[in-house]
Length: 220
Image (tube, rainbow, N blue to C red):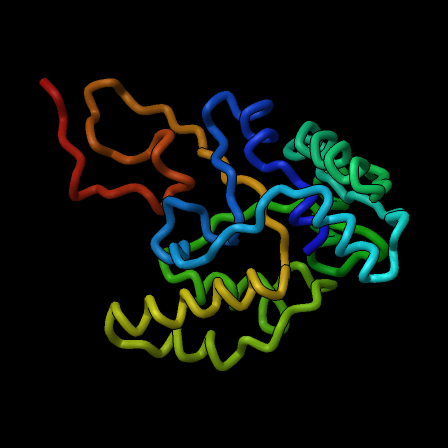
């Protein structure tokens, strides 16, 4: 929670995003269907971060590592490193090649924070179940809260209202637990002919799930 308060997400996106990054405070991107609108984001507050660190027994901060797949997260890691240093957390950046990144993802890591990104299917619970422990293939060193009942109810829901209710509950539980610390959502790059309209694939969409083929039309 202290780390979440320590990161100025808006400033990171403004400095690095060129309009393609959106500050984010929960795992689903703002454009995705189960981004929970009822969650109140934790504000950027260095004093609060230092207070929480002291309560946790780290009044002078602590040392850790940022495990980073350099091609995708190198510049972002430098920004986060500076943000953490301002509250006393000294984070050494350890650059991983792609193979080592996936080895850490699937076999585990120690003594540090792993930078990672992902895209989710429209049913957030299904993707969570596939990515995260205890059932998922990735992030095996991550300690997750017991949300198995919520995930099951979200997957078994047969109407949109119930599915939304349980997916929102899952997102809330992960936010409350600080299971991961989201800080931004990227837009993916797409090459689209200028006469293809209403495809929802550019800045308004976080990933390919934004594509709405029923809305597409061709401008003559």
